[in-house]
Image (tube, rainbow, N blue to C red; front, side, top):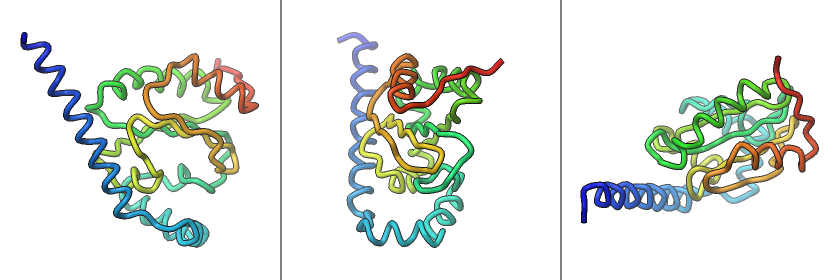
Length: 160
């Protein structure tokens, strides 16, 4: 095997291990639905996650001026790296239609638990009232993201 193949195998193994760790953390720290709703209702969950570097306005159930796309991934994940320029373009081009956010769940594992992330990257589409509309796991192209927003009824006016 050449060195590029070995590096590729190591990167894939690290990504798989990271996903397994996230799944384990999610399963061991999962709240039942009633407790999660109660915590969100009284803001304790939002305050807890905000203390860990996540903007509480990104959390489910929190109203916003615009619909929002929250991408949960990691700076060192290859599909996440491929999505980074797409997310940046969306953030600029569609700033008047929806907001776009990235959260690194390896740096902030609490966010991974809060959003019930099973694998990365995960994209969650929320309406302006904070209701989760759609969730996708894995790489998602710009065209697929825009198509999903259209399917969800969001008008895609671009900035500028």
